[in-house]
Length: 87
Image 1 (tube, helix red, strand yellow):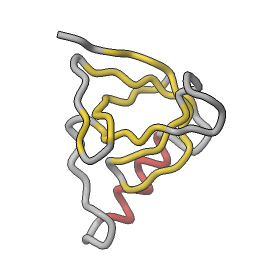
Image 2 (cartoon, one colour):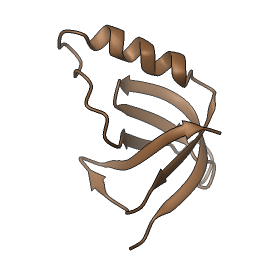
Image 3 (cartoon, helix red, strand yellow):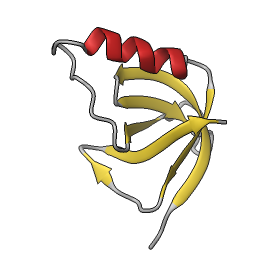
């Protein structure tokens, strides 16, 4: 089984379970779209979406450093699935 762990900076939240990060391992100005593992939050336009997004942004504000990990490499809809933890 192939897993990964790397640090990245939060660039922007798309919704409460999808975040754009800068892993700083690619050339300048490239970001990675990440689907948070085991997080099932309301999508944009659904009831509760604003509160869920506010909680996500409070835990990992734009510019904060985070550690992304997973025990496997899985891509869904162009997003890397990963767990997010404070760095």
